[in-house]
Length: 98
Image (cartoon, rainbow, N blue to C red; front, side, top):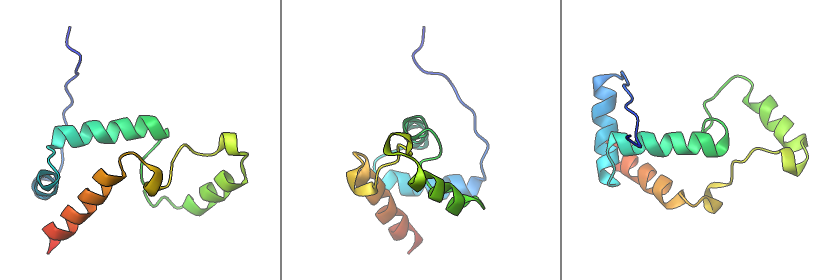
């Protein structure tokens, strides 16, 4: 029995090409990046970034008001073990845009 499961995604061809270029700069392919993304979704119990939902400020206020044990699992980037990866991705994306 395989330990992996196939997944099929449909994305804009230009987006995939641009993202693949950025990912290549940090030594990843799209499959590796999707695996990292899904691991972060599980670890944080939601999207690992601010998706800009209209109620973000309200949700943040609720998190701050909650007791520490109930607060979101998200850590500041500086404390995240994947911080070097995220920073490398940001640099590669900026370099790719230039």
